[in-house]
Length: 155
View 1 (cartoon, rainbow, N blue to C red):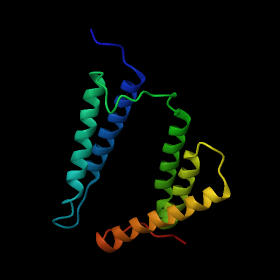
View 2: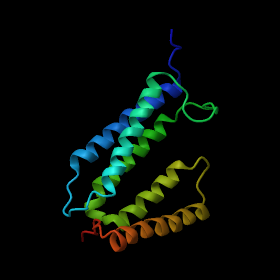
View 3: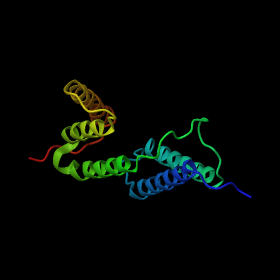
View 4: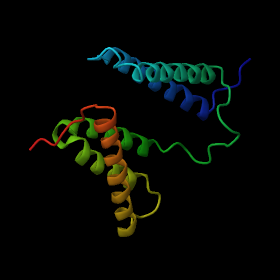
């Protein structure tokens, strides 16, 4: 007889279902304008789906995933819901704010949301600097190296 499902098992199953669903949405939405447009994207989507299925199977079989560390505190559901809502807002705002402005704004908001202690001016300034560097780097990689158009500011 199988042992009862633990919180980790339930988390693994939820994350696995979400991962497989995201991979399926990506797969169904892919549309390449060049012959080799999916050379990198298709294997990544397939790997995402396979890893999600493996995690789902391990969760359903109630097999431990990762190290022997135990969950020290309850899953911060409020923080998770806020993070998903913020990510959804970022995606909805992309056509209006563009990738650079929207990315920096939502990166900083997410960093402040993830803080466990009260945010300080120095900490927020550091978050802004990191956000500008990371978002600009990804923007340049996608636009100048991979030739992928990203949303621009609409004003």
